[in-house]
Length: 404
Image 1 (cartoon, one colour):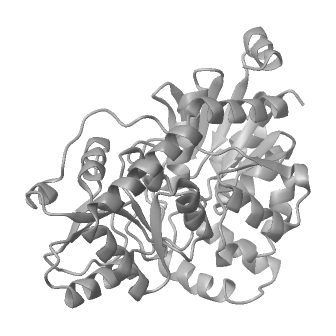
Image 2 (cartoon, rainbow, N blue to C red):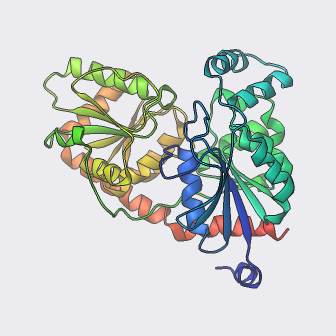
């Protein structure tokens, strides 16, 4: 630890707040998992409070957890009620209009309030207690907790934008937000390059802080539907089963692959909460939400991990797969995914159905290729994603902001 930060931590405890739209072990979103991992690491070195809502479902923002203070894995959590659930049909209609035009600022901000989650109680807490935290780190640029909350504590705010090339980021309402934060913390070089280009930021606006990974371990289990496969090979997707994550296209590609290769024994396993209709097919297994032990078991038994999202700032599931020596099949529309696979030498990628089918055929046929890609990925993650380095970057940037 740098001596200056060590002395500060010992002299008077540093107080950090993390603001995120939803929080908890049952939350599978990438930015929420990212927030929880960093919070739990830094709670051993400073006082960390997570400010979040009572919602668990990003589609409705309904209050499902009790408001008030609780503790999770050593982290103090303050939950606040959401003002109102999202009107999904109205939001979808407005999104269609806003994201496909150049709307005036009032309409953009109306979209943001419908995007949510809006919690007046959380915002009032930031107004009232914001100065009691040395630094306030906001996770993901996209939600109202960040858009409405960060300006209230701009003098001590950091932003982990988890940004990627998607329609929303081109709204002019975000131009000022990215400049209000004292420091931007990026997950990958591709994310930093894209955000700098989009917002014309100065060179010292932020750093690539990365993400840390723990060595695989702990309990393993398999969902009953996968145990019934009795060792049949499967391509695995882990995360929110959502069209925006590329899952609809993944299923279509896979079913077409089966039509063209009926001799293949391969299955597709979708592990995560579904936000789309999944076709009924004996070779497509949807497990629903899985525990950490079940995720460990699924990754350990998979032929490869599918990473189909066109929008990524970092694919944590790919890192988890590589740690278990598994190759990744990635959507090449995402520069981040391609960059991850190239740096790791741990995966293959596709832009079309034909390329997807070729990737799957190649991995199915060549066990040695699967082994070499998986091992290269494992070595890469162990070398580049150790928590010691990543934790220090976050701690130092938060401490610098806290100390002015």
